[in-house]
Length: 158
Image (cartoon, rainbow, N blue to C red; front, side):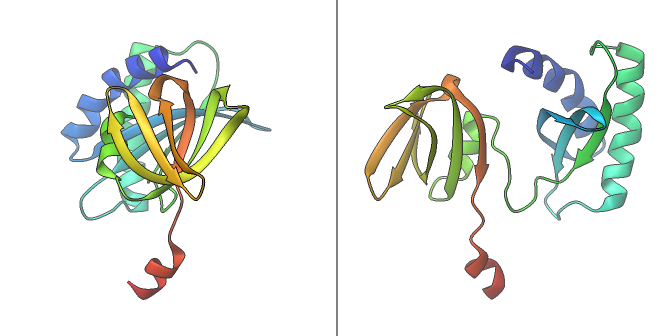
């Protein structure tokens, strides 16, 4: 799904999800043997339960049925972002400064489409990753997909 279409979907869904007391983290499309899947990620200060996902799914499903912004058939899936949280906005990159992330780019940068490093800076539409090879500045518009890399050692200690 193009970023502009995703942004329009976020604008439609965010008020409903916020009205239920949750944060809309983002939306993404996935293809599976079952067809197209619209995955809606939600979060809350105290975390997300299955009941939270069911509650949001019922409201979002009804809204999508009424507004009908998506052509064709698809499955709706509401999920927590999990420990390998996807990143959708520059504000989310700022929120996770100092965390390790994996990025997949739309177009190659220095001959590569995949980068892993610590989010060192976010400024003027650029995400700067720091890795053993130094800093790499990546234009936000060139990021196709990004996820945090879980720190399992910290999770085990916490």
